[in-house]
Figure 1 (cartoon, rainbow, N blue to C red):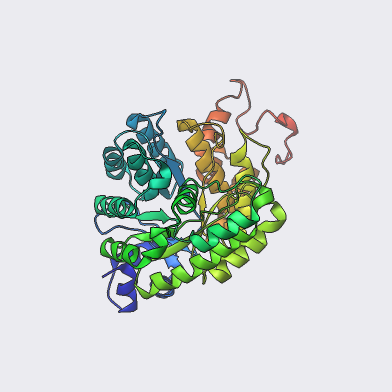
Figure 2 (cartoon, rainbow, N blue to C red; figure 1 turned 90 degrees about the horizontal axis):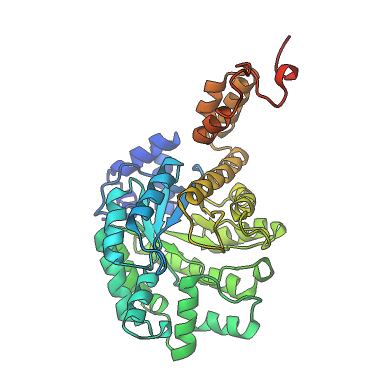
Length: 422
């Protein structure tokens, strides 16, 4: 049985207790929320996870970090270093988006090394295999795509991004209405190419029941991808994006009926004034499924600083109800991120999530800020390091103080520190 079936049938499942303890919530609340589909616990039956993390309403905002090779950069040691940096920085999940090298071997090593949930986008591998055969991406075969999904599930992948909301009808709307920069989701763009070139339906949509059977077999959580997510603020909240969201809402209900956990992915670029409406709409049309947003980035002109634009949008989105933030690194739109980029991306997303958790009243969020403030007032640097979100950065900056500095102040105010009583 899947986790969802277990809770619906009142069977004991140890994942419930672990999540309840981690979130400081009752097991009854977790069980009811999983049964209703408002919380998911991504975990493949073939994996032994050290850390169990749940995503959904009423929980701490979670953060995902993307890693993976490209055809121009194939070094598994580097990707494992990124994984380690992401986990140490506090990432709750990792997605392997590799498109270069031996993808099966790379994924196997990532799964073995990763203590948290691992997600993938199977159509990436299907595209790689198609191109390796000398074919065009528009010639991706449905049977090949399902073979990849089954293979990745067997390996132990915990959640998969599947672009099931792209179909012939939604592509027609995209073609008719147009966009400033078109579809920017890689997986989404692959399927648009296939539909436009062949006139055939998206196999993930057409054979959705088959996808549910695989997900149920391995208890994989489906992350219903936003193939028409906006890639610039001009394209935010347009027709293709909203129509796809409506389709995803219907697919959420079918997944729940099959006993399969699911969440919905959200837009990438939105102007700040559209964030609230997008979250409300996604929760409404998605039947309160957990929301997984990439940012959103709230301006398009900040390459090199998109971890900042993402954190701004992410904090606002999560405060309105987004449950899972996909990090964005300083390298976004420019190049493949390095280890330091990954670390900065995770910390930025965690800050955004914590900001939102204060607003949402998540247990312990405000209390942590209060503890930090208390020790700041006391000028107790070790305690501040304990409660800050990035102790490594804290220690690095303190180490830059001159050796003759007074221990209880920094060099900004020195003896004029407002926190001093004398």
